[in-house]
Image 1 (cartoon, one colour):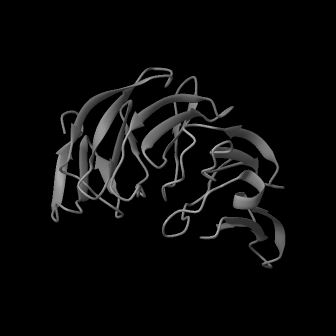
Image 2: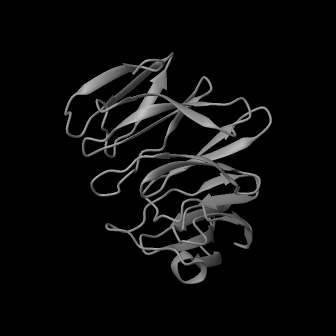
Image 3: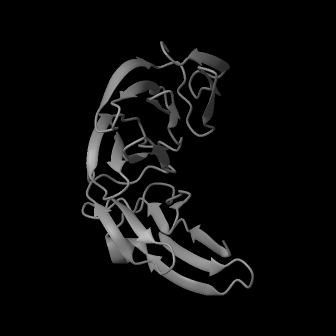
Length: 206
């Protein structure tokens, strides 16, 4: 609508009028929700769905939260894995019976129920600097997650209701650090970090 949302590198979330620049509300996610600073300053694009705003403070108690986008009030809070955030903008996945919120934290990919923040599943995904700035990709009932510094990525097959995720394959080839990737007609297109070339991976086999 006519509201603009900005999340600063120092953990300040602000809602402004897009027409006038007037501030509607602000919330310091470090001071108010126990969020933790990370190496190069937090950087995450807030995800908005209806009147809900989703973001990752990265605290041990308030790890991922849903806020009322009109006033900043807390709707739900998830402890998730209790890890720091990892520069990642979350992904909303709409399944027939559930909407998932999927994101990276310090050493894991996590899948939350977007309705209440319940942690449904996680997949260990560490790398040298805990940088996971690529939003995961969803296609054909599965999630592709990936990060740089030689780590690579893998495919998680979701159950029909999104409550579980099972790894189908893992490859160190597409170790993209920051540029992201796209999936088109069953093929993943992107580039690498240590593997400094453009590439195309088969979605089903890697």
